[in-house]
Length: 91
Figure 1 (cartoon, rainbow, N blue to C red):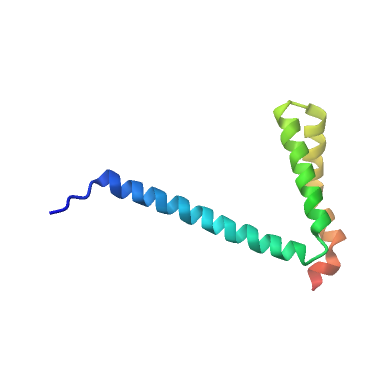
Figure 2: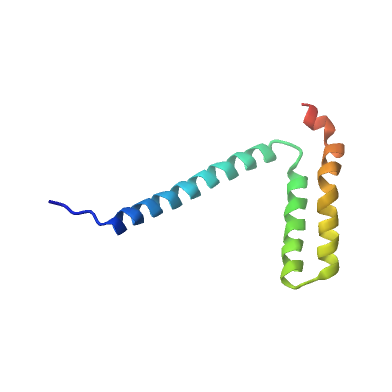
């Protein structure tokens, strides 16, 4: 008779959940990448990556003024995006 240990069941469950997590994130990133490349928002994506990188660096090095400025921009950004891209949103 084969005895299955509770720890081995938990390990299998843990491995499965990690593989499923990576697979779903990979699919999500692929479809986002596919849609961004086929549209005019490539430059927007590049800008967001640069601003996010600057935010991470400024947070890591405790750069108060840059953090304040990025937080201020982050509050205004959703409204600005709606105004700037209202034609694409209508489509």
